[in-house]
Image (cartoon, rainbow, N blue to C red; front, side):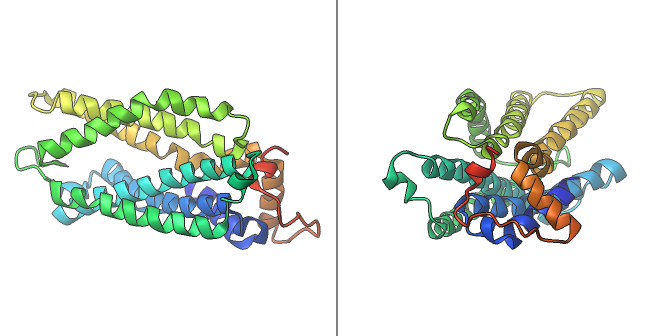
Length: 272
């Protein structure tokens, strides 16, 4: 479902001329690309690990480092694109003409380039401090300072979820942008809580039964993290009648003669 949904988003946002030139939908497009990468590569490797008991992160040091590096970079780019889309909708629907003029497709291109550079650089520490433990044989952080750095920001994410949840009621935000917030909040709470628990029990001697339960819980949390990736397309279908119309046209293989004005914006679309 997630692969099909992201393929449809890529098709619609890249091929439809009205969406392709809109900053907000450009952010959606870039986010969908990284959604697809997360589902196919990162989630795919986890499904292989759970379904066939072949954990490549415990076999290959290279994949142990690379997997977390890619996950950190791609997930960060995805989340930033969601934030940029929200910011763009604020600018577009602002009563201040100066703010509205800040929303341009060229500005979106620049913002995405900067986002890519920052997150790829930010992921480098995972290549350095992620390794296979000589004691447990698991792929984990080998540097406690870096481990605490990750946990600190996980705690910060949890503490900020209340503020994030309040943003969806802002009258200047569109439904399509806001419908992405709840999966992010849900995933952030569970992942942050798990990271805090991991740090708190890092030096604890655990029984095999407890380790099995922890692995099961960790797998469930990891799958929950992909909820937003898998559900975004379907949330858009529910939120916007115009998006449903365009999707139907693409699935049926025909384009309607009805033309949407070139200046239409996702914010307007979401309120239909």
